Length: 92
Image 1 (spheres, rainbow, N blue to C red):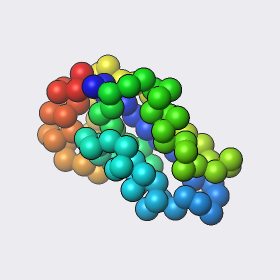
Image 2: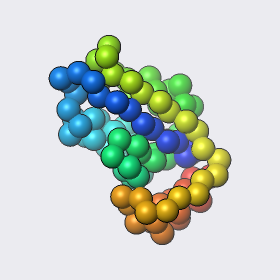
Image 3: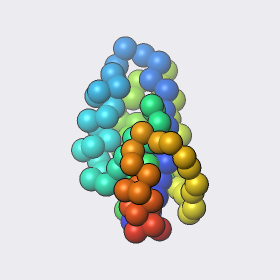
Image 4: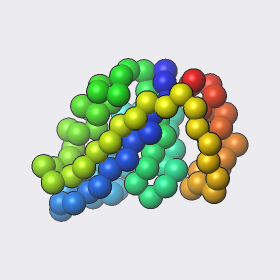
């Protein structure tokens, strides 16, 4: 497993943010929204594989960025800092 940061801009009518949230939840069990449209996910594959799975729900006007991360630092996220820190370290 590896740590990935996923961020997106939904510019069309579909998918909604709820639909995107549900799509991410179906793809990866260990995840957390860290900012409004930024997620940390623990994924067993490459950034390109994760991108390809995520983009199946996106429209042509939507934007998506997937980054594999080796280390991170943060403050005041939408998820509990300790839970994310433990999950990040476990996946690294």
